[in-house]
Amino acid sequence: MSTNNTLSFYTLTVCIGKNVSLTVHSPDYTRHLLVGTLGLTLPDASLSTTGFQMQIVNHQLELEWPGHGQLVVIHSTNTDNETHHRYDVTWKAFRPKELRDVYHLEGAHWYGAAQVKRQCWPIEKWRMPLVPFIAGDSMKDSQYGGVQERYFLSSRGIAIFVSPTVPLWVAISEKGDRLLKLVSKFQSPFQRASSDQEPLCLQYSIFQTADVLATHQLVSSIMIDRPSDIPDERMLKHPIWSTWAVYKRNITQATVLAFAREIKQRGFEAAQLEIDDDWTPAYGDMCFDTAKFPDAKSMVSELREMGFRVTLWVHPFASITSDALNSGDFWVRSPLTRGFTTWWNGIAKCLDVTNPSAVQWFQTSLRSLIDEVIIIIFIYWHCLRSMQSRVYVMVWCCSVCLSYNRPTVGLLLWACRAGDVDRMLPIAQRVNGECG
Image (cartoon, rainbow, N blue to C red; front, side):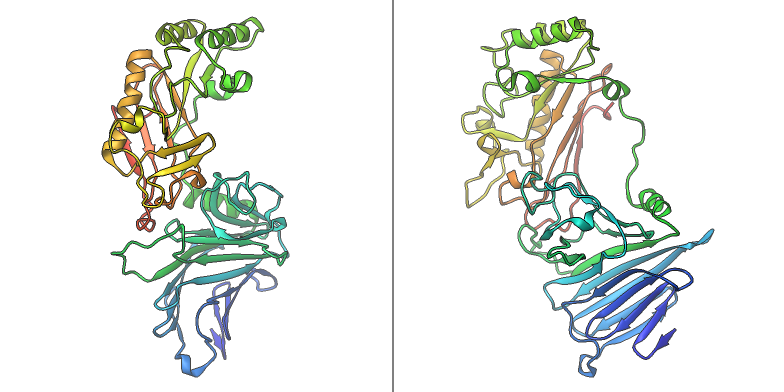
């Protein structure tokens, strides 16, 4: 239904002026549940010279600025529940280098987004400037942390979920204005592949149900992967004992064994023991430092006899003093820094997980530890976006898990080189079966 410059589309009202004003109403149209201003980088739609056009075809709303951009909104609903609505919003820019939509946060509490340094809750209390929505350093202001989802949930039963393929920038109440700004643009750290001729895109879905619980249940069932099984119960029921908590880097074979004995003596469950920082000769070398661990295999055997499962800390970095650095062409290259980057413990190079040979080398190194030392589990972290060489534009992380009864290595690595960010597909390498 259309009246002058206003068009109704199920529970949406779209008003065309200089920009596009979008309102999501309650099913009886008595309440405004979400209000937004869309297309802020496109020409004034109210001017006849713009040639702006809009139409509804079946369940699809189409708005077009000829030569500049196009907005398509597709409606779908749950046939069993008429209070459930989904609007898939897709912007395409033919000329602008940025697409920007803004939604008002006032009148509701909002949840989701990411871990940040100043973790106020609900998130309308944040003051986050417009920054790339990627896994940064959560100990720094104005960066989104490593725990994040492109998901914004309102207490009014509305949710916004942004497509993972969008080069997304997000601001939340940047100037205390209670605005959620969603921006798509190829600007560092996002870079477009030279072969990519597709228009710039901003794509997200708006979900609407009767209340916040129903909305979250709907979104999580459709948009968020569920685990296929429960986690290892032993890892959840009992402590994970880490050498870092007591000894920091000052660990040896003797201190690890003494740590394990003390845990038992004090009546605690053996469970999981993590050998953390500084068990190698240098960062990146996948072998025990024999000066500190003269017989690692017997140490692990003794720990297992005491009831411990043993974890080793590994990471994607190789220090300038490591033998690993000379093991092959396995490291990220950068013309600016010769591939060197900084992480929390110095200067190093970072494993190039887009290189199959590098992945194979890393897997083989872990397999050697399994075969030689009988290590059961590897814990992998310290791979924030802020620690990556500039040639990388997205965070990558690795999860390595081993079956306790049948040692197998599972290695899953996410990475994205500059120019390939639009793909954002995981590079998955698995050896000898699935993770246990």
